Length: 194
Image (spheres, rainbow, N blue to C red):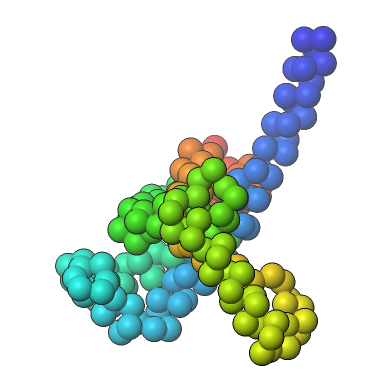
């Protein structure tokens, strides 16, 4: 039995690059889109970053916007190809940490409101009634079948769920690297560090 398990582990060693590859392929488009949105609406994002009344109240909002947008967009591309994976994971983790605790924390855990969840806070619990009212209005006054043909309506709670999940995925990439056989990092390391 021990020998069979050792053979299994030996097999896994040859495909261990698939896990970091899956993380990279999942994270890259999400982060690149977030960075692209910040770059496309740079002045609005900088205003939100800097405004203490209705925004985040961060210092140097233009610099912070450029850093966040660049980290997400260009870092996401580097993740996609697996280049400098461990290094790029660090500023991305910092960006996700700031997003979680400066933007999303007041909304609780859930990203999408689910009143039946044990993680639901008062805001999420109240969302069920609001969602039912919105659906009723749309059923009476809109083409509800067409409106829901692409999926159900939900209420975005905007909690820390996604930011923390991305943070932990990036932590895994920091520890694992880009992946054996599946990243530019692997081939650079094999060529220059062997």
